[in-house]
Length: 182
Length: 324
Image 1 (cartoon, rainbow over the protein chains, first blue to last red):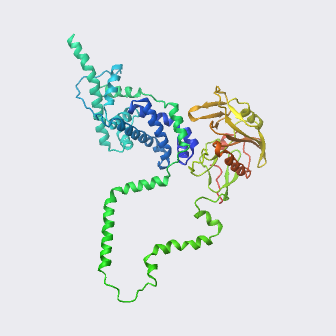
Image 2 (cartoon, rainbow over the protein chains, first blue to last red):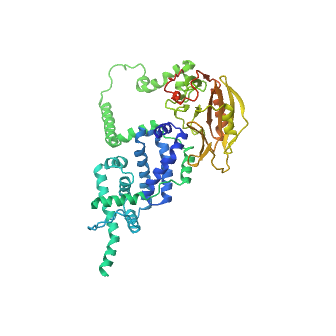
Image 3 (cartoon, chains in turn orange, cyan):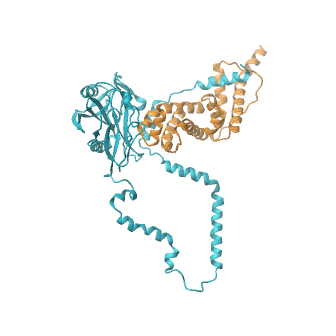
């Protein structure tokens, strides 16, 4: 059904696109929200990307590539937005890691620390994390979405995870220290 | 589970916790914008891709072109002056071959028969026509403007006859005519009543019509702007800005809220058939006038089994003919 709508929209059928848009908009928004960590910005980016999807749809070759193609548009839009906002900010702050094993269960404190760690990541590293853990994309799939080599994807994922792990553990260290003082 | 898997799982949980629904104002903003946004032509995109691919070669090619011109100029300068008579009858004719090429076809264009004119005009002649066949349980043929095409991949219960890509932004939402035979024994009057009595809709006085021998009614339908609760027959889907008339059988009927919809309901030898289209307020009159002219040419070709959806694999069982 979706493929049928995509093909119709590719040929300029606005009603077909209107049927596609709610589901597509949600998917774009979900990715944008995870990369940008800002509801309003993510809404703006998803809205602009929906319009761009409509405008560029005739250039899409094959409806089966639609998902990856539309994610590429939204990720690029997020990059533009982050670069606009962070021209003066730090890019990627890598922290040292130690051997503390985090609990699997996600606590509020963990979430806060991951949020903070994620905000310090560069747009490229954010995108790799979201595409890997939210969309369950493989490295070759991410490489196609981002237009970078697979090796680059793997290395970005490695450093992004390292940074997030470090952020998480930075929060735990004071707690351990406090216990030691007690 | 090892340490790495634990951390992966943690990240998965953390990233899953974000929001998944685009706020409705952003969706509506996008949909409102696309109505006036022209799609980039596929041809333009392909050309751009082609040019992008050759972009790295641009500098070497430019240098090569400059060198070629320089070498050519040097060759001309170093040539000895001609000693014999000039072989060309007129210098102008040989020095400007493009002029000859561009001017030569013009007499041909001027004397071309009228039937060839559309191939050199910016848009097809509005009077050009062809016949389209379509249909399932209620097959039919139509005489339509030459740029129209029948959609070969119609949904099982919908036949669409539409034009090729049209992004001229004239306010017509797509360009289509829906032909729909509900999978019920509902009469034309009962179907009409389902529109007229629905509080979600504003319906004009039904106008008796005859389409190719099939009698029925035409109405203009708008979505009632009052915020009424969903009914069994008409559920509002705000996200697609439409009201979907759910039939007792399969399928539905989209009523677009921000524009009038014209619906023809006719009885084709016992089958109730709905035909519909819509356009923006500005384009509606001219669009429906054109649709009426097209529908006057309708010929119902055969009658299938009423209510049998299996006979409605429209557009696949009956090949289209495009007689320009």
